[in-house]
Image (cartoon, rainbow, N blue to C red):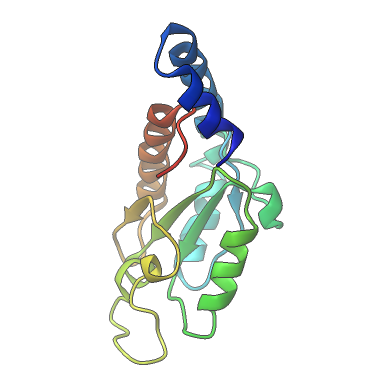
Length: 163
């Protein structure tokens, strides 16, 4: 059990912890740093999301990190092969808590049109997914929308431990 869980359990839901929880949620939501984890064609749209004219920096996500230890968001974009699944899980395990996952595209979410033994039929079989982005490939605007949905989830979480 982490420090946040004991803090929340000890103090409950009073005025001070509610205000601190909202402040922590706001700070976390507005500084989400994604990991560089593009697997296929959806990665091109993810790169467009980070650059002009979409500018993910407006949402505090301009710093794509090459190290999982410096990121708290994994955007899985593209199809995940069976050989890549353990690597994906290892990178997820190396990320510090709290951490979130966006499944970008039909291939990452459901396996897409690749219904065979070599392709994982949904990344949620390996890591817990917070937001799904439909499309083949989804536009950068859809990824921005999913980031805004994730930010609202993070703000609502506050200091509560993730379930």
